[in-house]
Length: 112
Image (cartoon, rainbow, N blue to C red; front, side, top):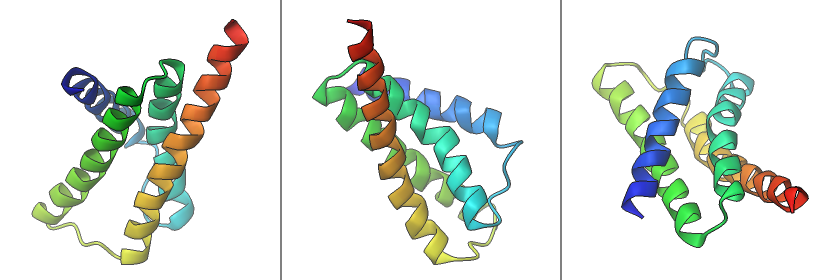
C-alpha cells in the first residue's frame, strides 16, 4: 500500500501543479472543474489496475492531499471563503475518484 499511496500522491501533486494555473477556485463550478481535473485521472488509473489496495491507497492519497492543500492555504494566510465549498470539495473528491474508477474499469474490460 505504501508504494501505491506515494505514487498516487505524486500523481496528484503533478496534476495540481499543471492544473493550478488554469483554474482559480473562487466559485463552486471552478472548484468542481478543478477537482474533476485532479481526481478523475486518479480514479481512472485505479480502475485500470483494479485491486482493493489501489483503491484504498488512492482514497487515502486524495484525502490527505486535499487536506494538505487546505492546511498549506491556512499556513500561508489564504482565507477559506466558504466552508460549504470545502465540504463539497471533499464530497466531489469521492465522486470523481469513484467515477474515474468505473470508467477505468470499463476501459480495461473493453480491451479484453
